[in-house]
Amino acid sequence: MITYEEALEIGKHRKPNADTCVEYETAYMFTAEEDANYIGGYGHDAIVVSKEDGSFLELPQFLMKGEDEIKETRLRKELTYVEPADYFPKEIREKYFGKDDEIE
Image (tube, rainbow, N blue to C red; front, side, top):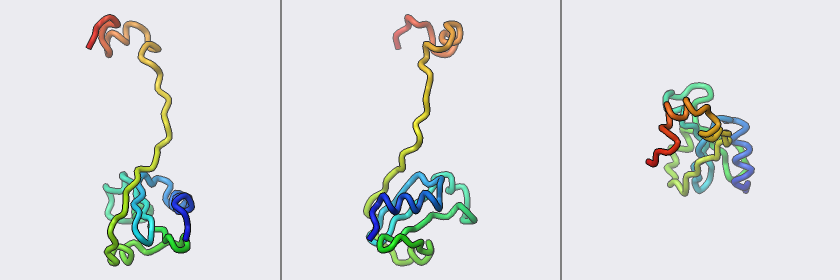
């Protein structure tokens, strides 16, 4: 049996844009929200990693087994640095954020 962390490493290697992991009794499925715009195709299918040995399972065959979902986990995205609003010149702050002394 492999751990979730090992499955995550395998899944992210094969599907780097994965943003969701669904755990089943015998496998982990990694999907990407952006793939919802596609009907299959290279790089747009979910990746299924076996809990038994870390091997990849064929998606249609796995889905036909009809296993119940145990839990769904959103994979953490990289944090983005954002400048504080007072970084902008006063004229721009007033135009987009209102006057500094306004209380919302």
